Length: 156
Image (cartoon, rainbow, N blue to C red; front, side, top):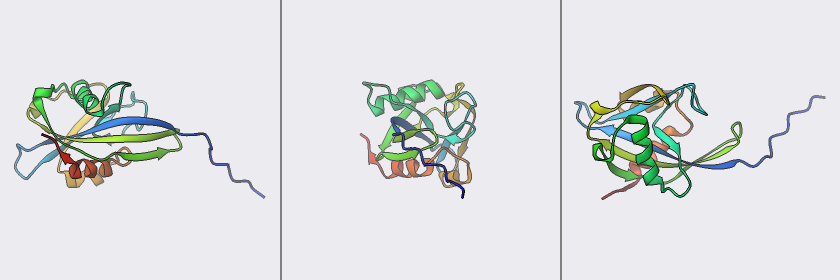
């Protein structure tokens, strides 16, 4: 008689993060969404495609953290992007990593797409039609987070 391995009963660590979806509207054929392929140097989901994301630092609002991650990962300042919408939180429980991801999605318009310079966290970037997102091997629930951002409340 073989025994099945017991499922881990260790509690998952709550991990609040932001994911910002950057759109450009200056190309024919409709909006284009920026996705970045995560490098081998990041802590999780190496090689997967993602938006611009990062951990929310203690004492920092999700919106402030979204702007910080955009600056760090793309080189774009607040005058080069415009917040369009903030989506409802999307949650993902990853037993393997021992994390309960609490994802705060944001949708931004990029006003200066030619100025983007990715940092060490990404090995490459692509502008794609949003409908093509499902064709990529992404971090968990990226499409759902994007849809949440799309449905989100418009920002002034």
